[in-house]
Image (cartoon, rainbow, N blue to C red):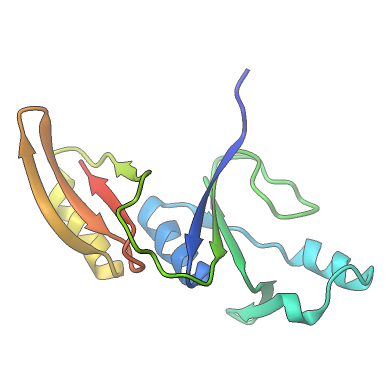
Length: 149
């Protein structure tokens, strides 16, 4: 048996982070419009919980991306598999991540992927060459570290 999962990442701007990581990973930004409309109609939420993103209502403090091949709950728009949820927090990132993503491009595509990610807003922190391998440590637009192998 497998489990569905989501990785939750604290963020200053969840929608910008979701857009960056969706492009970086080839994931899909989740659309929660049906759920939002249902909750508004039921009086369970108010407009204060929402913002506009690309002309559509979205959660003000949450944004998620999902693997495009995974199942989706049609009522909520939430992915039912591999997801990353970005949640707004008031404090900025202060120390090195305790958890990070490794993107596996392969040695033949690593430099191309690093350049593509830089164009999306990531920065190179360092090139690492060790007996165990070669990778590039990068930071996303909010400073979260990840590696491109």
